[in-house]
Length: 397
Image (cartoon, rainbow, N blue to C red):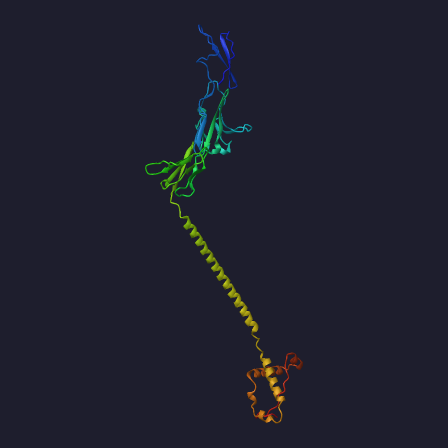
């Protein structure tokens, strides 16, 4: 608080103008007998104006925690106006305007100005006018980081105080891994990294061994990257290794099991790999051969099936069989002479026709009984046959 005094000391009363944060007040100091009191010296009877008494101006908290931003004040008898307590968030960008987050005025609280803090911001005291304008922010988030200002007004007194809040995120989801072959004589790297956490993060490795937690003598630790290099590893390096990730607000850890073994027989591994590859190729070739053979057999069966159908002649119809039989008999009858008629007449006629001929005759009789015209019979492929008349005993008449 700065004071500027403008005085006239040649008078029995010294009038002083005090400039306090832009507000000018007048104080009077009287001369006392035997003692001169200058305007630059304040007496115990000087009345003080509104002032903020809380002194803390910076806080560092972890995400999820709770913080109380203090703003306690003292009023004077001269402060007779309406009491206003306003909290604002000052943006990092000076070109932006400050935002009101909560306000106490006229014995009422208004906390709907800043949506990001809705439900998480409240006055610490149920009666802020008693001299406590502090606020609580619950369930802190990293986005709550910023500069907050408390303004207390009660005319003619005005006072304000800025508080810096820094919300950090604890390390979390820390994972450990091993890079490199876990063989004797090899270089092995143990890695540790946290998926969450506000920088700066620091990493520390420890080996859990009975009676000791020391690292191997040849190990090299990088606390910033979380890498632990184990040079020329030996079997004694085997064991459980713990990594602790930390920052200013918390820690997190993970562990990994290291098992250093003798080198593997490389020649045997290569031979086994080659043999396995050859067996796999042989099996594949056998499967391909079987598939091709089966395909050829199916193709051959189809071809043979088609060839058999093409070679088989279609069956003769019964009418054509009857016609050929009747034609042969007619030619035989036409060649008969009187000299050989006698032997032919001795043959019973009933023994000549076959079953096919009888069926054909029955068909012809059916056609004849239906009175089919001769032209239609010719078109239907009918052949005219001359049958000689016979007596009852079978002789030709």
